[in-house]
Amino acid sequence: METSTSYQVCVTSAAAAVVAGVVTYVYYKHKRRPRDASEVFDYLKIVTVTTEECCDKVVDELRRRSKKYNALGFDCEWVTEKQGKRRPVAYIQLSSYDGYCGLFNMNVMKSIPPSLKSLLEDETIYKVGVAPADDSQYLFHDFGVACKQTLDLRHLADLSRHEPGGLAFLAKSVLGAVMDKSWKVRCSDWEAEELTTRQVNYAAIDAHAAIRIYTSLLQRLRWQNAPFPWSTKWEPDELCRRLADRKYKARKNNNNNKAKSKEPKVGKDGVVMSKRYPNATRSKPLYHNCFLQAPDGELLCTCDSKKALWYVEKELADVVKEDPLTVRLRFEPAGRSVGDVGRYYQLQKENKCVVCGGTNSYIRKNVVPREYRKYFPEIMKDHSSHDVVLLCCDCHQVSNMRDQAVRERLAALCSAPFAAHHSSNKYTEDSACKRIRSAARALHYQSRKHELPEARRKELEDIILQYYPLHNEITVELLREACELQVIYENAEYESHGMKVVEYFLEREGLLRLEEVWRQHFLDSMEPKYMPELWSIKHNEERLRVKWKEGRLTQKDLKSIGLTKI
Image 1 (cartoon, one colour):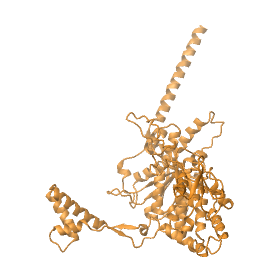
Image 2 (image 1 turned 90 degrees about the horizontal axis):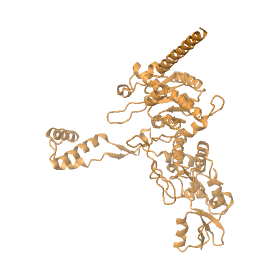
Image 3 (image 1 turned 90 degrees about the vertical axis):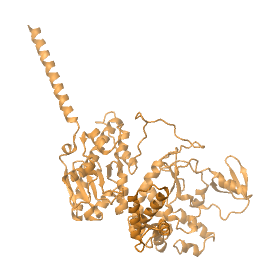
Image 4 (image 1 turned 30 degrees about the vertical axis):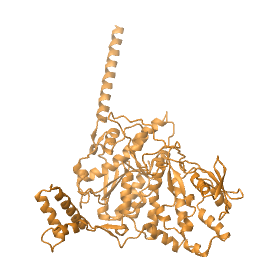
């Protein structure tokens, strides 16, 4: 009897456990099923910003709410014209993790208020999204703001072994949220005086989904990197800093949707050639570390083999040693190596990225950009190898993006134009004349082939005759003249940004100071770990001081760089 009762209890318990398991399974399956994003994110608080006062309040609130993850969801909206041309950014969206969303209406405000500009340029807060670097470039072009610490979610997806994709794909696969990506809202009028409810929700959800995906992927990475996440501290900041301001490049797949495993292309010297920068990535080492000696055997500098052998071929030097190649000059050089500035040129340099130490591929980085250096006097261009360093492809891309912040500061300081300004284009295009010329060329070419319909011929002729009102019909001479119409004109208002900056420093602080600004920026923004020994921010100043003491520098030379003494 007791055995039967025990059996019944066990059966009842087992049945209860099965029912509980089924209920739990159904609950979590229902919870995890994809739901509409507006349902998943029904807690959003959306604030549309149209005034600077409102902007300041919203930015302060976003800063306060971003402290937990040091990140904000980030996105932009704009109108694309029928011709495919992009209009200026109409809305900037920023969202915190807890659902506070600011929609900044740039159509009304016209310019970015200082508080929003400061937030976008804040290096302690990540702006996360899909392709945020592109949005950052648009903001720089349209409003001159250099957005910093943008982070593409697809980098984190790759690292967490999750299939990367667009924002809608990641929202559905990571958060179970189905986003509204209908072309009717994506391509709607973002410059309208007032957005529809659907537009507002679309813009806010885009930004908020990004910050939610960001935290979920970081949590997944935490579990992958720590065996016991509840007891092991894992800080993602170092990882995020390494990925910040770096564009994402999707991996190519074959027809079976599997990654191809091709061997990388290797140059003659064993250097892997990158496809990302096919024209810029070096296939040969930059530094050959050959030695150039004075006639008495004193070491002058290291150089590449081509330069060393040029002296030999011109009978200006003799080969002293084959390995390493050492060449001794037959004439007395203009100067010898003096102090640290001279010893810098004597040191052997490594062919690797000065930031991360990568050796697979590298690109020459001009620490002082050429757009400024090309306006320097010859005395400063001479021996400019000090400001050429090697970076891997990824570090080169990040460095170039971070350079925009300095360009913006210089533009404001020196009143120098940028691409966002009308007067900054060296050439302008007359769209009306271009339309006339296109019509004339089409008429001329298609008429020769006898393939032009009569209606189309009449349309093209009308376009041309509108430009030539004194003519009643199209003649051969008129058609030939219209085919050669000038459509590109030099902009009389054009002012080169680089030239304006150089002129400003030349008149005030001197060009040495401009060099120092860029060198210090490179050190601060990239934190290179493998810079050449004796590389100095004041290198040119030290080099010119040596020349001055040796009498190889005149007062006129000093004046050419904006100085009276050194």
